Length: 276
Image (cartoon, rainbow, N blue to C red; front, side, top):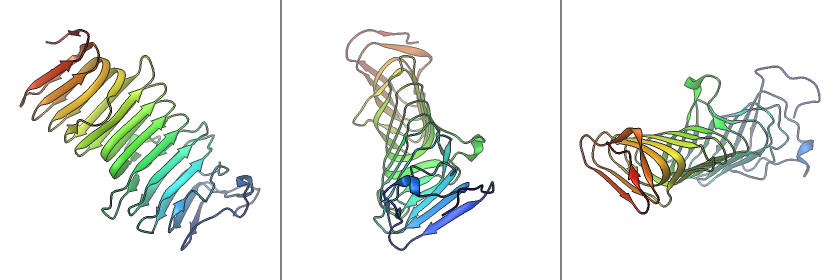
């Protein structure tokens, strides 16, 4: 689809199939789709369609219509790509950009499990994962099961996850979660990296720690977290705040606060300083 010539800004291509969308050639360079927007609908987009060469595409929407259908797409975008309405009924979503362009989530978001069936979302960027040019256009990454976000640089995301995980190589991680959430590992490898997690609901202890130089955590209805940080600020508007820290801990300037509950901190080794 398309040609070697120019395409109009704001143009779009929609492809729909009762089963699968495939590349005619095994060489993805032979698949030419020239447009600003790409809309894919199939029973399952389970990785058989190679999107690596689609470097003109700026916005992608994709739907799997089969109850267990997946959306599995890998891009190699030199410029940012916006996910604008990616969804499954009950299957998994896995989207990767291996190029230099940021992976962004637009207003219509990314949702696995629209049929109330547990799904999972995995997003991975070789650079940053963030917001569109207009922050008001940022959508939500949602799944009843796991949402896992990884990037080589900063991550900024809105989520509605049952279980939440995130990891960055450099930079920081900023997450805004709606609904109670159980934490998998949240980690930045950056020596100066910070993690900020703001939850409307409860933060529940999970399988992995929060690992960073500094972390700021807030929840509206209770907070219980495992941490491996140097500096921590945390608050729970209602119910208790419980922290189990693996190493020494310094309380940040915002302190540790649970005005309607109790604050409990256990430091497994090292000093505990800065509390007020």
